[in-house]
Structures are given as structure tokens and as C-alpha cells.
Image (tube, rainbow, N blue to C red; front, side, top):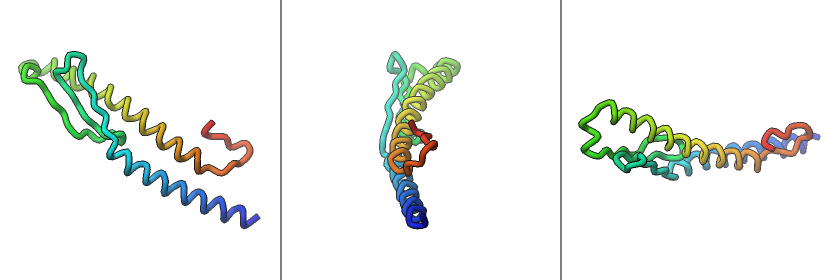
Length: 107
């Protein structure tokens, strides 16, 4: 019984390290998103850190329009990054979870 517990604890520690490694790797996965007309583009990591924003000069003339573009484009990019992030971390977590009857959390 204790051998099983020690094995599970080792497996959980290993999984925890894989999750941390995956989070670091996701810092290098870049998501590029552009507004429909290409006047604004943003780049962020799969961990949702903004890396760059490029704004066409014509958007600088209209503050409200620029704000709208930023909100829409950033939200689309964040949604994509979140989907990638969650899928990657869930795959690592599922792979490392011990098979305990009744604990099918990641089905």
C-alpha cells in the first residue's frame, strides 16, 4: 500500500514538473491576431503576455475607434491563447494523473 502511495506521489511530482515546463514553453508560443482590415495587429504568448502591438497611423486619428480595435483584437488573441494554454496544460495533467476509480476529472 505504501509503495503505491510513494509511486503516486512520485508521479504527481513528475507531473507538476511537466506542468511547469509546459508553462515555460508556452511563453515561446506566439499568437498573432489582426483586425479584419489589418489596421491593428497584436502578438501575445500562449500564457497571454502581450509581446507587441502595431497600429496603423490612420487609427491614431480616432481615439474611440482605436480603443474599439484594441478591445476586439486583444479579446480574439486572448481567446486563442487561452484555448492553446488550457489544451496543453490539460494534456500534461491528464497524462500524469494516477488512475483512481471514480476520479475521472479529465475525461
